[in-house]
Length: 140
Picture 1 (tube, helix red, strand yellow):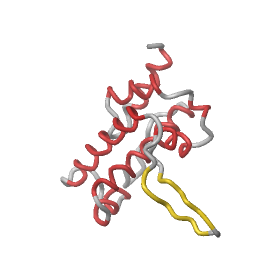
Picture 2: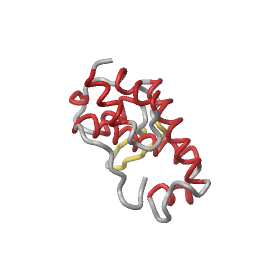
Picture 3: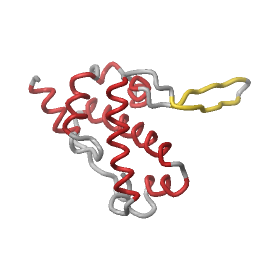
Picture 4: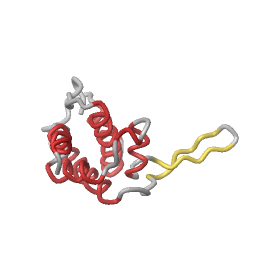
């Protein structure tokens, strides 16, 4: 592993739900962040965005596409599942945060995949901008 990939791995480890295995896999398997224009494009490459069907001005959002990098998608979902499990146990999500609201009103697996999608977008932003993750106040 090159020193640049090592720096990416250390930055990615600051994200909740991303451990050493996921961070290393992201650094090794993900293409250069400049390949994608935005985080949604990276999340779509991993296979974590909903399919969209639109006709006549109406837009319908369907199930998650599951097309893309299978290994990274699975690792992100496992990490997101751990974060949701901690938040459900009352130790992770502050009251009123995005994650707490999602857990209260949506099925657990939908919350897990939504959080994995959000994590993929954060991963792209950290790798593209070279910054360290800073948790927003009151959210995950």
